[in-house]
Image (cartoon, rainbow, N blue to C red; front, top):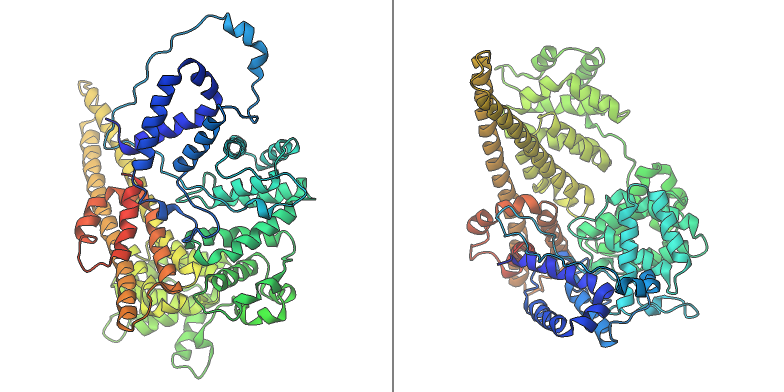
Length: 618
């Protein structure tokens, strides 16, 4: 019997092909077709849809229904069936050769049986229909937007998706093909193209193409359709901003990245005053978070002084501080100033690791945390000119940093706190330098996770960089495990090949033994890494459940509604972990259920996130 995910996938294929062959099947095999349609409809209508909330872009369906793609396709096929399977969208060139085809040799196709389900079988994840526009958003004097459940809407969107997929390797050609398709359309095609592209950009857990693909593509479309596309795109951006309040944080991050990139190509010109409602909003208001992140990204794509040039004066409170390094030991009245000056001289004279570590030790020969903090703060200050300067400094003193950081988790936490104090106004530096030190094995993933959830970063919870650091750390560990697993596979093939050729007298037995030992070591390393990864994800998810549960308990104690913007934000970041790392977490599903999500202390509003995740692949 087919797995549920396999059944859903096969049904999707069946419905996708029906617009092309529905007429012939209805004429020649009507009873069989009706039986299949009836059975398929019962299955679709009766299946669980717990997973939907995990994949929906918005937490509210006030503007558009965010239905399952298969449910929408079923409604569209029923609409087609009600008009006798007749549509005007598909170009059926073969009709001109109908007489010749009737006399052609008929072929009997073999029956098809889906492969049996296996534990390692992988199936496409379900998707949710994304809608941004309706007929009221389109010009009154132009063509009408097809209804959400019309077959024309499905067929046009399928063709647009196919054009993007087929030409994804060259965005310039992709834009030209979309522009060519738009010329003969009798629908508001600019609106439909943008809706399809944004549906891909915001698709969860991952878009079909890299997120960086869509920004340049939209720029090319604006160039090719200069009279319509820029205006419709501005309208789309405004609609997305107005609906940002319930947008999933992961989608909001993509919106921020695309919009800031788009503005950078148009001189950062925008009707900023239309967004002044965010200026007086609470810090957890999603519109304010969005506007703040866009301004931060615009600074990265230009320079700090330019923000004051294109932003209205009313937006002055939202302009971030200059992204310069901060070193509190520049103040000569600060305790530690003299030692900091000494470290400056040592670093500038390129002193070796032994000289630096000797200065960091106390009278008992132990590493002094205060001296280590001063050294790292000075290192960041003296190498602040560029990323290259900082990377060179980290590499030059990697032995010092690694030796001291390895002594305790507290030393690593001190290093991270000092890094934040130095670059708190430059989020890009924080993201890249934490990742760099993880790669250099100066920092441990577990310590980075603890730091992210520490009280010292509580004030950064509404900012994008904090969650980017968290997910980057988890992804780096996953990539490392994947590399070790690949090495194990190579060694297994090599050892197996040696066993097959074991009768060769010239074979070096020492090499065999050495590679067998290396294989065992790599296997053990892989198992240890997977155990560490599982415990790390358990720790991350536990920290999220504690944050959410404590908030619910506090609100209920005070007699308030716990469904606040803060709760929605943390809940969205909780979902983001399941979405971005779903393939890894799927392997630990039973462990997560047993060790974390079976507790009666977990609130149902928190538990439902895990249940939605499980339903994605069940």
